[in-house]
Length: 298
Image (cartoon, rainbow, N blue to C red):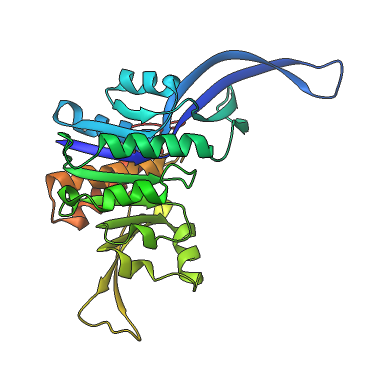
């Protein structure tokens, strides 16, 4: 199976430090670096989780803006990074003491530059043109609202008839989700969904997608579905079904939303018509990774 993951790719960098002395120039500890590691983050974390779940049975193509540093990490995990291009990679740099406590985080930037976005638009349009030999069994859109998924890029995805009948899953942090209308699934967390409900400027998300999955942390997830037969222009009916997650002692929730998205996509490849099985499976996978420190895979 071939899966396309497209969106804001990142590196999650961890620097582990310890201290035994105070600085002479100010009242602050001096931290000594013990070790460092880099992991795939953002859309790259989704791709990495899909590869971990599918193994040799799945080829995961990652598309996004990234420098050679991320592409090298991706290759080491088995993720195909040939659709990534760019000179800069968004890095979330976390400093951690040796007890596992986060001290602070530094990000190198918050939005991709206009130059990088235009570069990726041209690259993606060429690589995924209609005559491209690459076909996908599912498309996962991981949108952290950093700029990768411009209108031009989304149009390429929506206008490609090869993918219209296949699973397209969207995980987005932007306010206006109407640009993704027509995708099979939108996945939001509780905070993101509450922002949608309270924002009267935009169409209700349940109307835009076949399914809306709202993740609720340790409480599991809720599946929402708009009833097309009982709805009218004046009002609409939404069916809600809760799926509880197993109780676990969470160590770190970093990246668990990415795992949830990846697991739903993988489950739907195995059972295309069983959204409930996909949500249950995704809950279990998310419960698995929160028991690990940092951005992790199933």
